[in-house]
Length: 56
Image 1 (tube, rainbow, N blue to C red):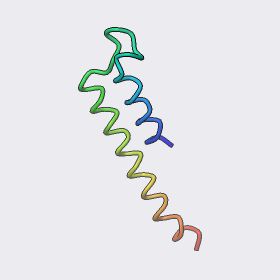
Image 2 (cartoon, rainbow, N blue to C red; image 1 turned 120 degrees about the horizontal axis):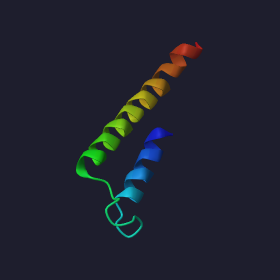
Image 3 (cartoon, rainbow, N blue to C red; image 1 turned 45 degrees about the horizontal axis):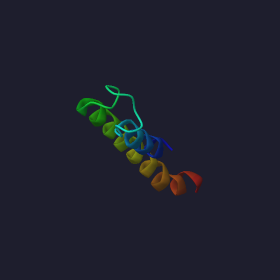
């Protein structure tokens, strides 16, 4: 679920119409969120591919 939450967070916090002035993400905050999302996707992929081996 982390990648879905990260994408939603990125979409909401980068929208200047929904955030107060000065509270939108800075470039480095976006990079951190993208890295966390990538780690989440990587771990989800590892879980999905390793689950059949674990269950057998």
